[in-house]
Length: 91
Image (tube, rainbow, N blue to C red; front, top):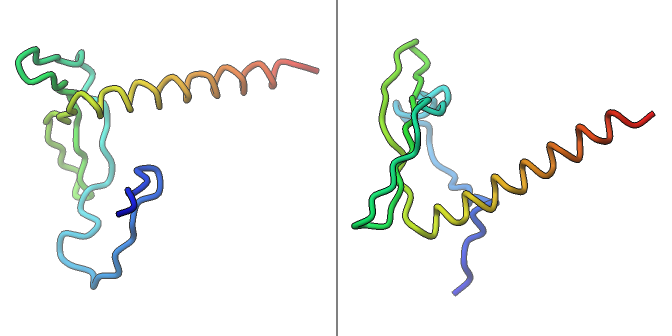
């Protein structure tokens, strides 16, 4: 069985439902990540913003593997950002 690439999500052809498009975006909640030693998971505070202007604060729960994947992805993003900034400074 082939594993699904998390960077290339599978598209499922479906009919639109009432729930489609209700979430506008998700923002970092502004607080520190909480690590749960017992489960090895991390809770990242987020704010889910809806199209009607309302928002709710909640947490994104990440298991240990997801924490490592996110750490690697953030490191790559920081390296790309630094490289981009350096390229823009060169004449």
